[in-house]
Length: 191
Picture 1: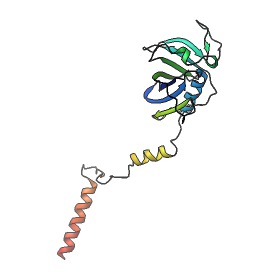
Picture 2 (picture 1 turned 180 degrees about the horizontal axis):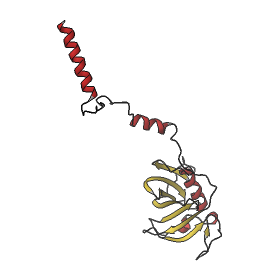
Picture 3 (picture 1 turned 60 degrees about the horizontal axis):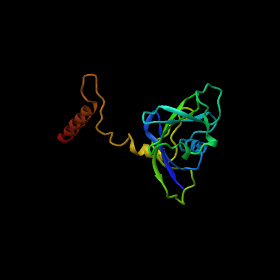
Picture 4 (picture 1 turned 180 degrees about the vertical axis):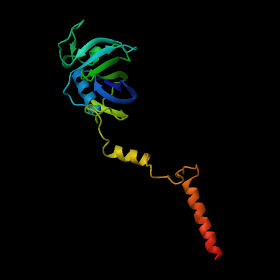
């Protein structure tokens, strides 16, 4: 049984992506669900895939359901369409659109085909995550380890010595303080 590995790029920032592995006999509905899980989105909205080419042009539509919109060609349905039936070349591409109001776009590219199935994975599976995913409903705070990593990486309290406050005459207040301290120490030594 063939295992297909797809790289799912967030359309607005290709440094954010998820690699997912899926059996060629599984459906687009299962691919849809693993993409939502990988990007931490809920499954409350409309969605569709488009078969695509190297220029990311939209081709045949593979839809979650038949929507109330005009179609040039009847869409295939995700639950009835296997992934393997829509693979036309070794670098097959799909465009995935989720939540037609927000219009979340993802570029889905076949990056590997393997005959070996991993006994450790429950397919479809997310096998790699890169970048912090966009928030489905606006901003969300970083949680857990991610926040800790950023605090350590950008700890602004370290190395702050040497920054002084400029006085209105252009001299550094810190320099003046140290000079007056030196003068008072010298006058104390003279006594």
